[in-house]
Image (cartoon, rainbow, N blue to C red; front, side, top):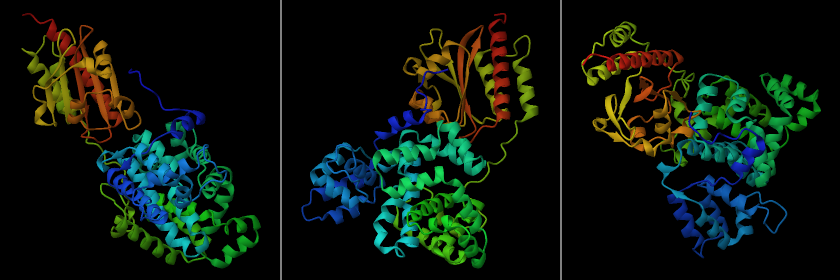
Amino acid sequence: MVASTPLPRTLDAWLKQLDGQVLPIAAHHHQQVRRALGDSRRSLREIADLMQDSPALVLSVLREANSKGSALGEAAESLETALNRLGLKRAEDLLARLPARATSDIPQPLRQIQLISQHATYQANGLFAARLARLWQEIHWGSLLFLSPVWTLLAAYPHLFEAWEQRVLVKGEPPVKVEREMLGVSLFELCLGLAERWRLPAWITQGYRLLIDDRRLLAKALHLARHDEPLRQQQGLDADPVLQRWLTQPANSILLANILAVSAHNAWSGQHTRRWHGLTSLYLQLPVAELQQQIHQNAAHSARQLDTTGLWHPAQALLWPWDARHFQPPKATPAPQTTDWRQLCTQLLAQPSAFSNVQQLTGCARQAVQAAGLPRLVMLLADRTHSRLQVQQHAGVAANAVGMTLDPTQSQVLRRLLQKPAQLRLTPANVAQFSALLPGDLKALLPSEHLLIRSLASNDRVVMLLFADLEGKPITDAIVQAFTKTTQCIERALDTFSKRQR
């Protein structure tokens, strides 16, 4: 209905778009690092320690150091090495180019995925770094940056995160199917492509290649880890030297740490989480109970150290009943009030018109939409020239909606809606394409990623626009059908009212 830039659908198109995606830096981190770079008393190690509180800044520095213009051929795999390569002046120039944003202005999904990465780093350090002390830098930076390609994806399209949560974690759809439908490509292939372009630490690309090319090996490892008896596990490893060699590779530590953090995002006791606990137990040769205790301690420690304001950290769920879930299946939406709805629709369809003025008609229309299961709505009346829209009816929104007027020429969506009758359903999957084209005053009245929009015509000419939602909650297909039937009744009422004897 509305011209908009669609999401890329091929790997090359995604890589081209996300390769240059700039990540915002929290303003207070930006200021702290800027001061540190200008302080000659600070060592590179101290500056690196300060920078790592901002995952976006860490990624930006490594990308800059490993760019094609770098004089050295070998990629920098740690932040301190990257700073050494850039030098303080070039690092200052880079920082000046990065946007500093108030925390509240950084998309919440981007902050959430970065928190998951930071949680993964605490898990990696707590579970693996002490055992592999000489490799602690590879473990630390690899675990922090493993999901960094996803950071740029969510910086560009924040709505994808909630859509993924709802479809994969709540509804239980297969992740591969969801990724293909949302992105057109495999998420792992996209992450691998970006990691190779940015020359991220080798363990990161190795982890993604495992997820893409060696899924059979990974499945064998997960299957073996299901056995609780150490003797049976050892017998299985003795019979499969390839699998045994894979289980000794240190690079697996960053993949395991990130999967533990991602799976904990929903539940500590889910089937997916238990499988990866079992594999990590096999990898570390630890009893599962002892491993879980360490994982929970690491999670609690990270929650105490990290800024979790407005975000979800799975350590909070350690206080809940063991089978609790962060994401619950959506509660059943209240069914339309069938009796009231039918009576109101009958009144709208009455011949001759049952209404003596527009206010009565739109009041009945408002009640019918609410009875159809949509408690929050705004109804806008258009003038004869379609140059002005005024709120005619509203429900469930702020009081300042009374008398509000909008200029449709300032909104592409409103202009298209006024051209001919149309219906638009906004969801997390498409809201980013349309939200920027709606007036800010209207979005403030109905702050929602689930919205039904309809233009209503009388005698083939649009006279009203209707916006309705379920107070921000997902809207079921049944309610969409009831809404559509209701708007058809409203249009019939408008036609009948326009032909009444004056």
